[in-house]
Amino acid sequence: MKAIRQKEAADSISCAACSLVNLCLGKGLDQAELDKLDQIIDKKTQYDNEEYLFHSGETMTAVYAVRSGMVKTLITTEGGAEQITGFHLPGELVGLDGFGDDRHLCNAVALGTTTVCELKVESFDWVCEHIQGIRAQLMRMIGEELNHEQGMLLALGQMKADERLATLLLSLSERYKKRGFSALEFNLPMPRHDLANYLGLAPETLSRIFSKMHEEGILDVSGRDLRILDMPRMRKLAHCSQC
Amino acid sequence: MKAIRQKEAADSISCAACSLVNLCLGKGLDQAELDKLDQIIDKKTQYDNEEYLFHSGETMTAVYAVRSGMVKTLITTEGGAEQITGFHLPGELVGLDGFGDDRHLCNAVALGTTTVCELKVESFDWVCEHIQGIRAQLMRMIGEELNHEQGMLLALGQMKADERLATLLLSLSERYKKRGFSALEFNLPMPRHDLANYLGLAPETLSRIFSKMHEEGILDVSGRDLRILDMPRMRKLAHCSQC
DNA sequence: CGTATCTTTGATTTACTTCAAAACTTGTGG
DNA sequence: CCACAAGTTTTGAAGTAAATCAAAGATACG
Image 1: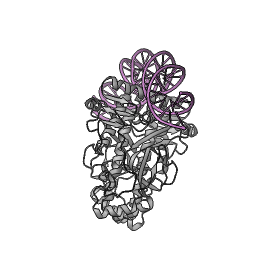
Image 2 (image 1 turned 60 degrees about the vertical axis):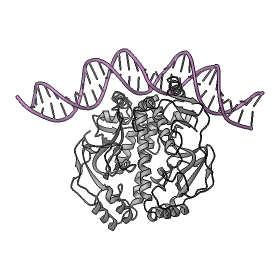
Image 3 (image 1 turned 90 degrees about the horizontal axis):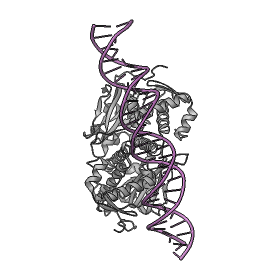
Image 4 (image 1 turned 90 degrees about the vertical axis):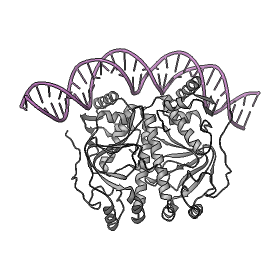
């Protein structure tokens, strides 16, 4: 099993030509609307591994759509505790949290080399008013984000360690599939520590769960490469038929 | 200590005259805009304790603004496990989760006699287009909702039982204060079972934490009436200076 | 090729759950 | 107004999932 981490050319292409258009803000727009969107969106920014898109407390300057790579969002307490609140795949939005009071509550960090498209807040009103239908898609994406976070609340509040991991892996599987990648074999670009933190577990516990699932033939895991062998059992663990 | 549960007349008044206008959708609108909003919003619906506003899986018909009482939202698994994802106070929105795919993921249930204002989805586009500034306020409220859920992820993922309870109590305290009620003395209209579920704890554990906090002089609790005695220690427990 | 980082495995501890039962509250009808 | 049933909350004792502590194996990297 080898790395399957997807890569795309970092150069700027139009929204209309972007393979992610039907997952991203441009979904449902016609050619003229996509052209307008193109003129507003910045498609240049590339980040290295562990580089910050923005920090907690900073004034919100843009909403970000992941284009390639992955972005993690995390919040911290003064005590130094931190909680990863999301792993964001290409086509997903990052930075919506800033709408609350124009400041970001969370931090956003690139996992591996990552490129993003930016929709500046100054352009936000114009875009909503002049591109028919983009508001509907934005609301859809916001709804999905809320649903996803509620699913994580369920996982953290009610599920055992193995069920939480299954929930996360199924979510990633689903989302990779939507993007045209394998639903059964993919790469986890983040360290175990990050996975464990996201799931509210100690890294040691997560490692033991991986080992147990491997022994039971549910998955193959080699470093950060993962293959799901027994999807039915994985689903059963996650208590989630739709996942 | 006696019940402090706020009550308001259930009869329909205008947004402009509503004491919650500066917390709710109408914030920042001028008189003409508030008049338009009034014509669109339904202000009649009253729910009894434990009555459902909507169920998981139902098509979204409206966004709801709590007017009096309280609404809890919860999601369930096929296995029968359930997780309460929020307690919503007057002026807060319920039902945003339906934007994802036009169906609600969560259930919304009244806690005690509760009245809500409804903004029908059919009116949603019209409102966003014709009432200047309401989109900004909607986005603010969405951002706050996202921030609040991320805070809960932090609590469930990283905090001990007592820290979680402190986090919840401070959040309620803050929100009551914003609404002109006491920040130190308020009523919890939900059973312990609901509080415990929200915090990802067994009811017995929650009860023990209440007892311990009482012994330590942090709070007085008598049934569902609560008084915070030592705010500094409560804040310290919650690891949250801004809370 | 060796150093630093990440991951896994093992042994022990602990915070929380579960099970069980008592105490308190609430509402209802005699 | 009191008795009593049904539900809710608290307290106690025992069990357990996961955390922590500790160290060995991998893996990446200059």
